[in-house]
Length: 410
Figure (tube, rainbow, N blue to C red):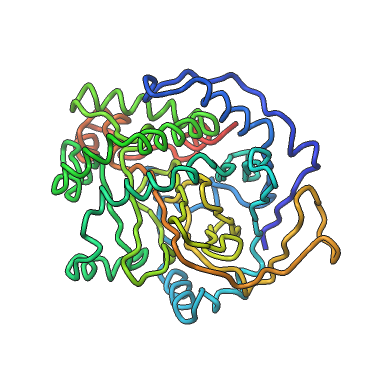
């Protein structure tokens, strides 16, 4: 069992120092007052949790080349998958998950008093940050549903489209990916779905709520991982000069909108590894559809297997973590021995705790911002492809440890 420690209340609420980073991508869209508020709420009132054994350097899944993640060994992966699918809610995995460290979200009477959470490895690398609830998004849920409708169109009612997604390794939901990728080509290009639905994407990207969400995601990235933001700025400059393209999503080349088909209750992802992504951060934004009562205290927590943590993803929070480096999935926790504790009480007691109970499981959706590893090959080597770089004498590798230090150290 991993050991995680929670420092004193004074340490958890202490203001974190450091110089403010210069605004890069999307500078013309940034509202300085909103940026300052996010910086203040992120660092002035953030909870800090520390793993005393886990390290990104030694325990996370990464390829030998250092560019991307990796999957668990086949036997281990097959066993996790089999147990997850053998019973509802992943219940067959509960004997293992009961030893994982739970990270609930503490709600307050006034949401403005709620705090984000930093999870740090033993080398002081912030490998997960879950934000406070951005209640302005809840107030604009009708706009979010409109954005979803613009992007999805009538596709949810198509039997052939539903069948195409039925065997998805992450789940049978519709996963729309837009933005730039390179994969094995010499130059980046828009995803096939993006090209086939260009008119929809253009309308979607012009919506105010979409612009505001991208700004929010970018502000959190600058605040929590300034090293990654700076690295991405350099990569983006290379792609602009070489190919004439700009990132559409702030510090990310891709957006995946996960939408449930009719009859599917929610987005609940199966065990998987995003191993072809960069070893840096992806961001997941959780939202709830209008007029539903989703029990986020018990439903769809995210498990990061190698770190042995389970994290509650309250709606309207943004969670950032290197998804390429973890085998991860959603799980319901109402059958686990999870104890709920009142806010500002450090030690659970029979008087201040209550047991989790099953609840509604409808209406959860998510937006995932991510970067594929091949989009870094050009900026890092100066060549269009890694193969071309190797032919010119490059090792074909990057120093994973050095990259981690620059990206995740605070």
